[in-house]
Length: 103
Image (cartoon, rainbow, N blue to C red; front, side):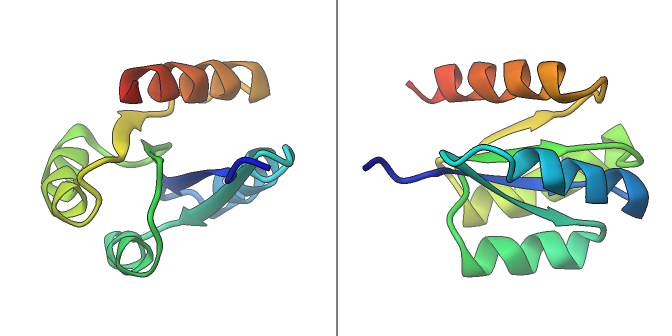
């Protein structure tokens, strides 16, 4: 059996991140970790290897740029991208596009 795809999602709105956590973990072939602070994101990247890192609701472009440099140093193989919301269909497409970038 293949290893599940590991996704880290970083956002500022706890309610949205709760929903995103459920969506990310709804598929057997994927596991998701959601965090709401930069410190939690860095800590998660120090503890686990992620395939995809998503910036979600509430993370400004400036915050994303600053955090990308830190996360890239910890997770050089991860695809780092923005999640634009809009439900599980869009999330699934964003994950598939990120996986295609890895290959």
